[in-house]
Amino acid sequence: MEDKRKKKIVTGFMVFLAAMWLCTVISKSIYASRLPIVSTESIESKYVEHVVNVDGIVVAGEKNPVTALGGLRVERLAVQVGDQVEEGDVLFAIDLEDLASIMEEKQNAIARIQTQIDTILANEELARQRKALEEQRAREDYDELARREDTLVGRAAEAYSQAEDDLGELHDGLDGETDDALKDALQQAAYAEADAKWQRDSAMKDAGRKVEDILAPENEDATLEVSRLELADLRADLALYQEVKNANGEIRAEHGGMVTDIFITTGGRTSDSAVMLLADDSVPCQFKTTLTQEQKKYVGLNDTVSLKLDGSSKEKEAVIDYLAESSSAPGSYEVYINLPEGTGVPGMSGTMSHVESGEKRPCCVTPAAVTTVEGRSHVYVVREREGILGMEYYAEQVSVRIADQNDYFVALENAPLDQEDRIIISSTKALENGEIVRLSE
Image (cartoon, rainbow, N blue to C red; front, side):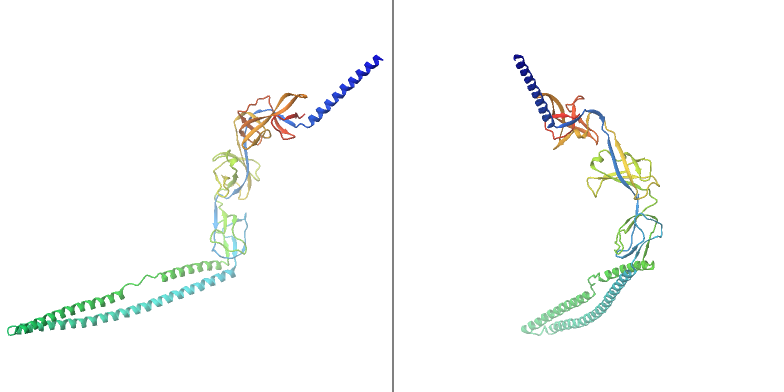
């Protein structure tokens, strides 16, 4: 009985231990299943290269504008962008009925201004005749006044001379009162003569000024000259419209080239600026592309790049001839590359490539390993420690500084890391510093 009891005790204890072991295994399994599963990598020594690949388009090296009279209605377009035209080819045609209406308006305006000019000239002739008549009458009045005033002065002079003679002839035999009377009469005659002369001089001055006023030039009036200039402009415009009419409203190319831009539409009207642009066949084409601010760090003026145009099986070396910030899109940069003569046509697309070789960095990880928040960067490193269930792994947050990076690698500097460290690159859950993790198998 004792042996059986001991056997039962041992068996029960073994069952207990098995149950405890099973519970521990289950607990560990449940505990482990809730842990983040992480993948890791080791730091590497790498060259951090920067590859710039941008698409672009071939544009004309130089464009010649096509101009036409402003305000003409376009009846039809004979070309479209990409067409190659020769000198004399029809580019577009003008609505002749609308042109006739415009010319009629110009002719009416010419007639109105011509009438204005004729009226101004007639009025000027009438004014000239009136002025000549006024001058003639003023001179006649002046001469008549001069004769009358001279007569009055002469009479006053004669009166003074007579008074003087009377006083001289009768002076010796006169008494004192008579003598005083004659002297007084002589004095009055002298005054009268002086007054007559003053009156004559004053009257003649006024009459002379009236003649001068009539002869004074009139105020300048630019109305006639302005009207003549307007008339000349209208006649010049009408002559240009007549040339268009004589050409049946067809506007032709003055030189050959590819049509690169069209700024008019059927039914619309021409402007005073260019209505089309034609590529100058005598000037080689250019390749044009745009860089972002980040790409511009690795591409500079006069850098050698690789260029591949559509339809070409090989890349060719080229040199960046122009690089500047875009005026239409600040923050981006326009690049132009002069192409060899006979290479490409406007509108052809292509790709520019450039590799900027970086220096070799001793501490590089993949971009997935680095987290940056508000300008501060860190990585998570797997560490070991003793836990309640034995040795366990946990994630330690390590602050780092990015020295360089591309799409494949991030170079870190002054980071407390070595080749043995396991850097976390992925996790099934968001990590926190010190969090227990499980390594992926």
